[in-house]
Structure formats: C-alpha cells, structure tokens
Image (cartoon, rainbow, N blue to C red; front, side, top):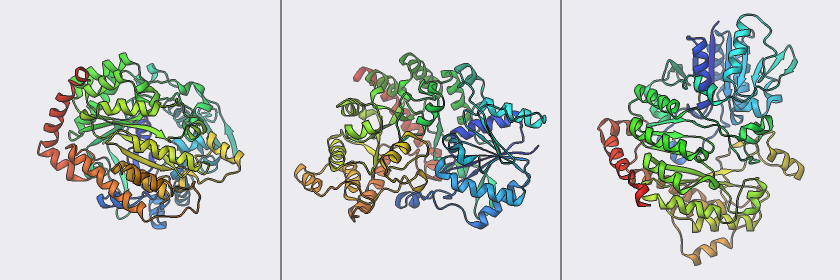
Length: 528
C-alpha cells in the first residue's frame, strides 16, 4: 500500500504532523511525506511589508497538479488547522477528481475542533491524539479487519457517520516510546512552478532559518475561551494536566536534528506553558542542556501566573535567550471574558521579573489580541496604558480576534448575538485603527506623557467600519524594521531567512557569539 502524509499550513514547522509522519514511517518506511504551503516560499521583503494572506489558497492549476500527484497513492492522510480547512477541502476534491478510489484521512487541529465539518469531506478523521490510534486503524485497515470502531476516529462509511469515543491521553511512559519527529528525511514540498520537489537545505533555510521548532510538554491548565485548547479540554478534562517525556528524550531529539543540520543555532519551544514544568525537572533540563546541547533556546509559551524568578534564572543560565508571554489585554474585564486567570497587577509584576533578566536576553515578545467587538473604550485604554508603562525593550505579536469554531468563545458570541470573523479570515490582518497603530508605536518608543494623552483622546471602541489611519502602516512597518534591528543589535542571526544567516554561521561568527553570550549567562543566577 502506498501511504502519503501531507501537511497543509503556512510553514513547514508542522510539529504535530512531523510526530505523526514519524509514526507512519515506523510502520511504512516508504511513506511519502509532503508539505503544501499555500502562501508560497518566504521572501525577506514579503515578510517585512505584507500580511500573511492565508485566504489566498492555491490556483486551479496547482490544485489539479496536486490532485494528479496524490492520485498514485492508496491512502492520503492530510493534516491542517482551521485557517487552512477550506484549502484542504479543495485539495480533497482535486484528489477525488483524479482518483475517486483513494482513501482519505484528515487529521490535525481542524477535525478535532470541528469534526462535523471535516467528516463531510474525508473517509476518516482523527478527533484526538493520533499516535496510538492511527497505528491501530492502519493495522486493521491493511489486514481488512473492521477498523470503523477505532477510538479517536470518526468514519464516513457511504454517507453513514460513525462517531467513536476517545482513548485515554498518552502517559509519559507511552510518549517515551514514540519516535522523534520526522525531520530532513526524504520529504517533498510543493512548488507552483515545479510541482513536488525535494525539501532540502535551501527550503529549510527559507522557512526555518537557523531555527529548529519543537514541543516538549503537552497540556494547558487554562481554558481560555478563544483557544482550541478549550475544545481539547471539553473532550478530556485531563488535557489541563501537563504531560511530557523525559529530559533525556527531548535532548536526544535535539541532538538528532543538529546531527542532520549542524547550522541549527536556536531551538524554539512552542509548549503552551513551558514554565509550568516542575522546578526539579527544569533543573535537570538546564544542566543537561548546557552540557550536551550548548545552544540558545527560545520559549514561546508562557502564562503570566507561572513566571517565577527562580525558574527564569535556571533557564536563562542554561541558554534561554528569548521568551514569549501571552498578555492579550490590559483590561481585567476582557481577561475575565476570555476566562484567562489574572490577578490585579500580575501581568505588570511578571513583566518586571522578565525585565530583570533583559541583559541576558533578546527583547521578549508579548501577545496582544485586538479588534474585539465587545471591548469598550475603557478596555482599549487600559491595554494601551499597560503597554505604555511596560518595562522596555519589548516586542509584540498582535492578533485580530478571530473565532475558532466550537470553542467557548464561539458559543459566547452566538449567545450575545454578535457576529465576529472566523479564524480563516486573517487573524494577522489587524484593522488599521488609531488604537492598533498606537500598539505598534508603543513597542518602538514611549512618547511624552502629554502627547500620549492627546492620542488617547482619539480612541474609540472597535467597530467593523472603524476609521482607518495612515499612522498604522507607518508604525507597523517601522516595528518590523525594529525587530530586524533588535536581532542585529543582539548579534543573533538565527531568524534571518534564506542563506544570509547560514553564511554568517558558516564563517563561524554565530557559534562564537553564542558561546560568549551563554558563558556570560551562566552567571545569571548569582547576579540576580
């Protein structure tokens, strides 16, 4: 049987997909692994001046080409998040048009949070953790046994929908037995000009720079209404508990990647709540990371209430040189609406802790959600004041509020009778309002208090037809140049796309700078 795995998203990061592709290869060594990035290959100036347009999709010619390529497979397993659900449906139609006999499985986040939608287009969908369930399904399918009772799966059998229940979440012992995520091993990527081509070093540099992306821990104690995790928790309340394999497991994964790509200079952890891992485990991680990996790492998932000074110290001393923390809003009312745990002053206090380590790190990232139709003028002013007074320097990720189907927020807005845009309508495409312009401005510089107060007087609540301002594209573009400046100032070239960063690494400059900085950071605990 020819088995094909396909990732459809805005990058080749695809952490969950890579885990599943490794499972597939363990069972079927010749499994074809493909990546489709609808927005195309990254370009430096595109990153600076354009929004990511996830609604652009693929041309009819591209869809036909993709369908023909997959028509040679017996089973095609697609993975996508909800922003790419419509593109995935078009690809499924193209595959069926080329060969109606192919068995199609759809996995990833979208079938989990919106299974009733996904099952209308596929023969099977994975609605829970897939590692164990997929192996059971595939074994029964190949041996022509009845596979339609497989838990964590739904099936569309000639129009009859079979909805199975859930398996228990994987334990640490089970996670230890899974192979590391598939990486740089006989992969293909779709090119509009050439069709599917080998995913080689140039493509990895174009999308991933000098960075390797991974996840160590799974689970989140929060139940934020806007997040897909709220649906995962609805399916199994134990998802709120943190689960992770051993320190040795994650260290071995990183070692394997660096052996294939020695240019990897930064590891980026996308855990939902990295700092919730117990202190004693982080101590073991820090010691082994220093001794066996010796490279900087970023932590891209911090919840304010879990930011602790002792954990910051142990991680910074091991090489953590950038963090990303979710703030979302400066309004207690809005945070309560999001059901995001918060105590008065906690965000500011955690920003201050992070700032105490700033001399050892690159500017931290803070997430902000804007364009919320229930925000009042007071809510927006509270967010702007929070960012005005925030310790500097800092960077931001700004997201326009978009609704993920079947989350608590989707139900909240339905009850309120408020229409809000769906996640597929460009969550990175924020409205060019005065308030959003000021969010970007404040991340660049802090204006005089009197000038800031004058600007605040012009702030109105968000409306779909809110007045645009020419200041928005100006400050947003300046902000992007600020990010580049911060990286150059910090002498960190790991996020430079293409061969720019690779050439600097090749000259030995990256490694030399990193070792000097990490040696300095080892003294962080004693100095703070």
